[in-house]
Amino acid sequence: MDVRAAVAFQSGKPLELASVRLDGPRAGEVLVEVKATGICHTDEFTLSGADPEGLFPAILGHEGAGVVVDTGPGVTSVAKGDHVIPLYTPECRQCPSCLSRKTNLCTAIRATQGAGVMPDGTSRFSLDGRTIHHYMGCSTFANFTVLPEIAVAKIRKDAPFDKVCYIGCGVTTGIGAVLNTARVEPGAKAIVFGLGGIGLNVIQGLRLASADMIIGVDRNNDKKAWGERFGMTHFVNPTEVGPDLVAHLVNMTKTPTDQIGGADYTFDCTGNVTVMRQALEACHRGWGQSIVIGVAAAGAEIATRPFQLVTGRVWKGTAFGGARSRTDVPKIVDWYMEGKIEIDPMITHVMPLADINQAFDLMRSGQSIRSVVTF
Image (cartoon, rainbow, N blue to C red; front, side, top):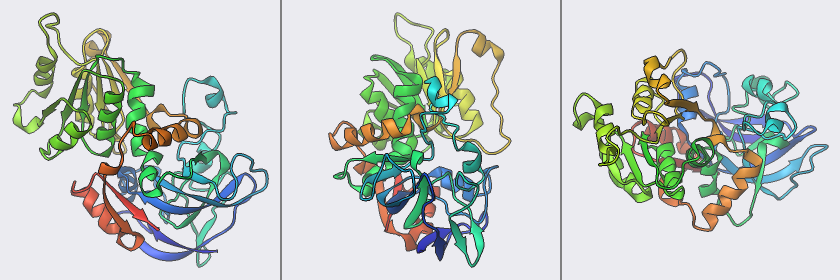
């Protein structure tokens, strides 16, 4: 079948709209009509050429929602008509990683996913006989896409596609980093570096966890109101507090009974390795945890003095917020529908596929929290 897609033909260039050939689902696969897709910084990371796994030409997009319109042989967990969210982190429930219960990083299709193809080693997309790569196993910048069965989460049918698509990455990543990776306890002190789409969801997760002090750090003063809307209690613009941001943050967290200071938990949502170091060093000695969420450029390295780690601080990484995707994503959709979390205010722009490059411009300039393309 022919589908409408925004194709990344080469890095550093705008996406191009094209009619692309999409083959139907094979064994263990599903054909999904994409109804809405978010524009995420990870898409820009790949499009810019900074992603070492970036492949071109490709159909990007990994934050979507849609309807199953066909299934291949052997598919049992979803059926035609089911509403689903594509998953860049699958959950096979059979590989050593899934069975370990120690990680959400399913390895069942990792090799082929990274190679831009389906589990059988081939792509379902092509243009004039030329292979078009899949992206993160999702490729939601097309109005139809094919995914492995283990890479779709079945969700309730009354959830709006243009809102819950955001759960396919940003919402789950931010909230999950708090609840699954850090396991923040009530009364904790936390610092969030970077108040974009991920950072605001970290703040939202901290509110859910009943954290006491939630400090947001961002160079853009416009983010203060956004952070407060989702539960932030204090705001710091690092350009306004002098040369030693870490000392400033540590002093903010001191109390009459704890003059050491430092946050119980910090979260880097920037992808900047300098900020990652600051986040670690703003942790409380003895027990502070710093969660790395942001993706740094290829070849970038993080560093700190060994003393910071020897004295009990911990660096942790998280992917997709530690969520077990097929299990947890439907629950988060329920939280949204029940009013436990907010999504609507963060969807600042909605537009058709024809304007997708404008959505990238809005993201790059910091004018949007999340833009959504609807089909």
